[in-house]
Length: 167
Image (tube, rainbow, N blue to C red; front, side, top):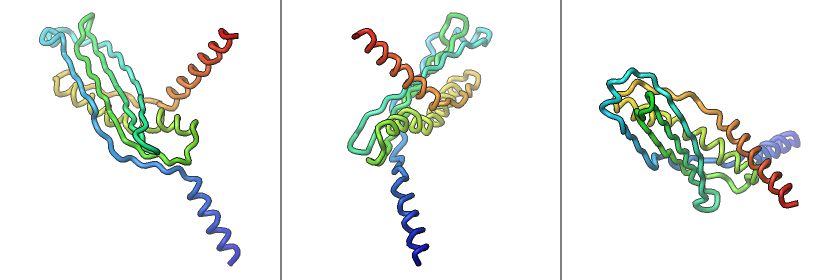
């Protein structure tokens, strides 16, 4: 009997330690596709130069509810001409429990949520490029954990540099 109570207590403690997380909605907030050099671009030999930019923003909607927006911009040039410019703002509304600490919350908003949003944004970009009759564009997976760590390190270095300058 005592062992059963101890096991139930451990299970209850595990449930309390788990972070409450839920996806409320995933949606396309803004989509833009431009082919400024068409139709001349279709006559050129296809030697693309792809530039990919990622950005993540988040906003607190209410206590424990956040909107995270992943902006993916793909600019493809052939020679000096822009073949296409595609920008997708893929967003999601996430519920994150109040028990999450600040550092953990920053990681969830800056890495975990964008990891969820990226496949949707990647699919959208691929579909838009395909509909514009350009060769298929398959974007590689992105390591948002590494990007987040680099961002945090840069912020720490900037803060340290600012403290040194103030001293």
